[in-house]
Image 1 (cartoon, rainbow, N blue to C red):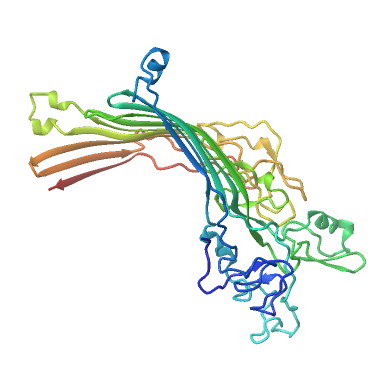
Image 2: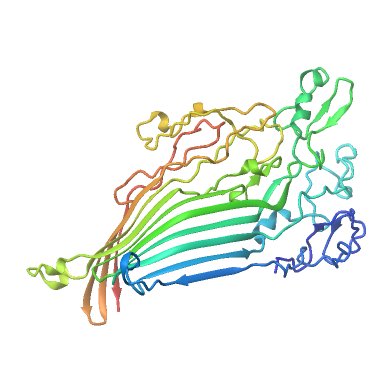
Length: 479
């Protein structure tokens, strides 16, 4: 069931329908209990009705080949040695409530409006200094929303082969994928008109008056004939600044090859896993999509990592064979750890300064002209430059840069966390455990992503790294 407010202090838009709960509301602005579209009943407390008809089929198959002879017998290892599984399904999900926080204080239950000058307390649209009117803001005509709300859903699918290699070893190979549709995201609802702004420059404005430029979407301009233009934003217009629609227009795709190799034994246990994958979307982390074309925001997911290899292990050290020393000293030693080699996360490319003249999020990026050169080890490069700045140029004033927001990865990981452990029996019900642990044991430089902001002086530079070697020891008494 979708989220709802226990006090019904939420609103929705159904164009052309007048509220009966709040008769003074603008037509189309409705609250729970109001009439909806003909034949649809009243507006529910969840705003959108619970959709019981969403079809979400799921199918799973498992097969264990029983071939014992020939090529198939050798390939599958005989009866009971191999399992082949396949599954697919569609899964619906509710929009997360945390994302709806940006809708707090909408009229009539609240109001967020910043006056241009201090106002009278009892007449909040009159300027306190001189009594002039700042004009009445309500009621106003609501814009038609970009699309009807639709429930997010994902399509998940996988195929795996698991093979027993010996009595204590097993290997699994799998293809795993998922596609997300109608995911929760946001995009600018009141962008500036770049062409209008460009026309309000030079001879397009009266001599000596303000010319349009970056971050002036809500300024007032004077034409040569004396007429005024109140900002460049639309469709909400001059009285509103940057506002975003919340919508279910985002999509995602993840596909991967996954391999695991596991061994469980008294002396050596380990689990090795490798993933080769690619994840793409147009709104990672509830980011703002390009309002003019959602597809322009499609890029590598912020969490994408092409290669990821992780192995965890525990090895019982064979010091007990040294019969010269006391058993209490030589028994109980083990070496354990986690080792990871992985591709870094994508670098987010951006440009500040509103060169697009839209005053909107998710659109300003530099132009990519090619010739990208990446230097993974930046310890000896000038200024620790990870990629060359010359591959990018500033976006043209009034246009959106062509650089994809995430199309290459930052520095990767090469990390070893190692622990040495000693268990000593004091009594049959008492023992002492000593542990010495080292994180990033070989003190390999784990560089942070460089700045992807074209207007930053650190563009392309690595300016930080994860912690170096950290060691700690502990002593524990167990009974």
